[in-house]
Image 1: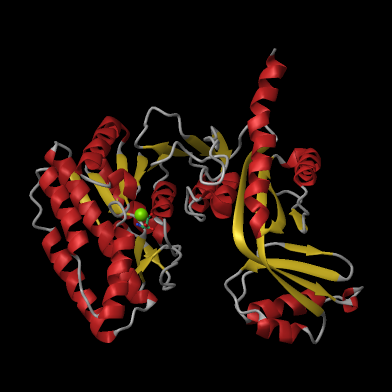
Image 2: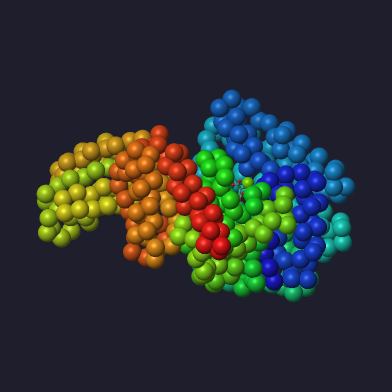
Length: 450
Ligand code: ASP
Ligand code: MG
């Protein structure tokens, strides 16, 4: 069997759903399971409706109702099933407007309607053109999560529950159309796996059912060498490893959910990222090992990073100093990204979302602390065996641009090299590096062929 996942933009309207159904029909002999996101920007619209109910007391689901009802009309399907869902959504929003409270738990319940509506519509349309289908809410497909609302993790029993629920359908030649993004915790409350979480739902189905492959259909030609909003000449990469895909996703390319690779990494199931607006484009293949043709695969960046510099002579030959230090970060719930150490100093970075004053006060017992805001992490994802060459050339680019590098981190076996520059300079650095390693490398390659 295979898993086909379609994101919101692939299901934006009736025409797109028709198109998706054709893609699925072609794959029927391979026994697909469909995983769907909410149509278009429905998740955002649901969150906006909640914000409005909360702030002004006004309840309006018009935009959401209109999109789904007009899609049903466009597809000529009969859909009494969505009416109770829309009614329930309306009641929930009234509840939010009265209580004037939106907890993570309520938020997850609210956004779940997007995927649940989409799955029913896609299943009904596929049925209407001759496929045998069944729409399933994630919990009917075996998805059990912890209770970490808005960013839940699937729990181990999902690994057995998913195939138990889905395999009988697949073997009976019924096409399961499953909601991505959502699950239920052990007590039965609806949870979500974090924004963009349908990717993870798809890879989880594939891993648990031992699928032949996962196809993730998006609105871009695959995983790109850089964020196209920063680097217009960014291009899709042909093949990457799971680790590289996760790095590219985390540090800015934002094509995939950062945790989506985990289930397939464990089971080595290939993942394809394809463009439903351009299906003949080859897309990106994500697998366990890739033959490297270039030293650098992609360049990403993250802005709004804070750098904390900690200097203390107490560090010298002092076992347990770092433990003490990081215990303080943990105490304030601060998640650290990059770390660099010397004999007498430690530099760490984090997203600029934390109040660092209490931490600074605590740490000043043991060290001098300096907080530097307005930084960016630039990350080069490349071939670890060629890291000296990459570092040499990357620093050459920074010197050429006259941009000082403030901190560097490069793991022993990791695929990435990260460094810190000022926020205002990150675009220039990313463009410069992209031009050097990826722009230039193509011509270098062709010269070598001659
Ligand atoms: N609909 C959800 C979101 O927009 C999940 C997803 O698209 O994967 O975040
Ligand atoms: Mg979406």
